[in-house]
Length: 347
Image (tube, rainbow, N blue to C red; front, side, top):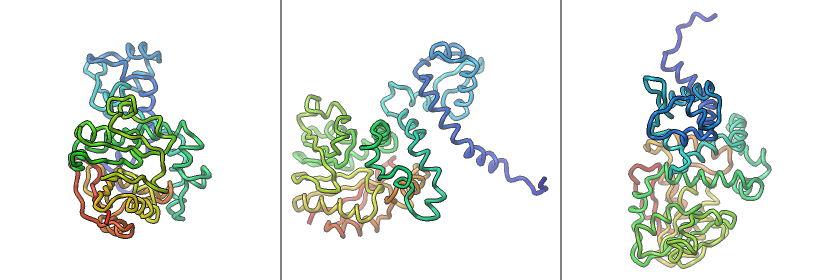
């Protein structure tokens, strides 16, 4: 047995907190699967009552709730009942943020399998995902495992809501009256919906892969309340983008691709847009000071595992805009957001 002095208590607790991180994720996943947050109303309830409501064992439910309370999901009262916390309210099925899908994706077989190959990917610099699944990540989610792809798409929508200050981004975009904004790869259309609601005098285009369009927000569909002002188009921005937009918006995409792909995507906008059209990139910056920096650095490493992408500096983006034939204009921070807004113009 070693006689060396023990590391600090803080260091030891941190070590075991990280070491048990896989369990913490599964505990929250279990709460989502059981519907514990949905079963708990405004008043505290004993674990046994909640267990009866969700059809679970009373003793095991109590143990799960105590473990979750240490993570901030639920809180135990002095008399042994449990009440909601801000975190536990987030994972209710009727909550508007989509947080359960963030948890579902984190525990899904795809990221868990890929993460097991981190050391190999760092050692070789080669992406793990194509080696494991035989194809690129985007192709896999669309063609090989659409169920996983659906969870991924919903998780990305949740990220749009939870990691970003959408009202601040809408304000920063500030489209002019009569402008047409094309959200390129806009997913289920959360940001575009916010833009249309805030600016009743603009029109919009949502360009997405054909397989994603059926999941677009119902308010943006032709029969929806905003449908008369938005066009839903199927397409791959790596191949081409339609002409006619005043603003081409690329939100949280560029970090997923290598420099060559980013230049190709931006050049497609430069060729499609009329002179003076805006090209706006919303992305995480390398070395940022966001409160989400821990998440951003993890995403940066995940791009090594997934293949191709990375976080970039302002200078990196400026150079990519220029290579694509665009005139870089500058950067704008977005309050309470993990990302920044970078703008260029079609020459």
